[in-house]
Length: 150
Image (cartoon, rainbow, N blue to C red; front, side, top):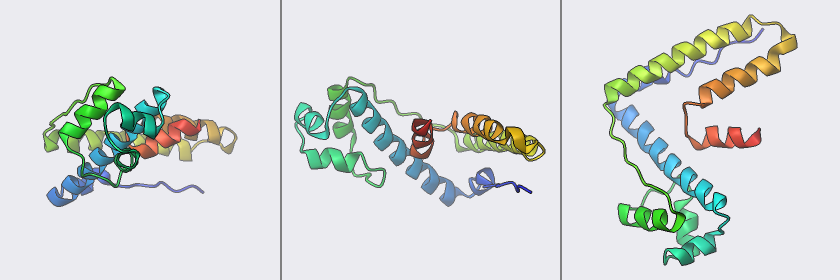
């Protein structure tokens, strides 16, 4: 019998310290992932991009790692200009964000309950549909990597 995996992120996000660490990590991850994606969409190597914005290839490599967060707005603007993309910063009220995660988790629970009760014949298709639906609201590199596997 399948069991549900409940991450309870919404509950964890009620803790102020946890949510700030969580969203800092997400932001770092999203910046790195999006820059990497756009570089590849433009058909550029790291060296090509570095030359376009007057940086070293090693700096581009570091920036494209989600664990790196020492970039600044000046650096992001240089990269944005070279990639011809817009940099956008969104400031959200954490109460709204926690509610959004609560809604997502409720939807995921309803979908997983349906999945667990389903016959095993259509399990792969149902799992795919649920996973795709849950990841659609996420821009984390894990979601992007999952989408790229398809």
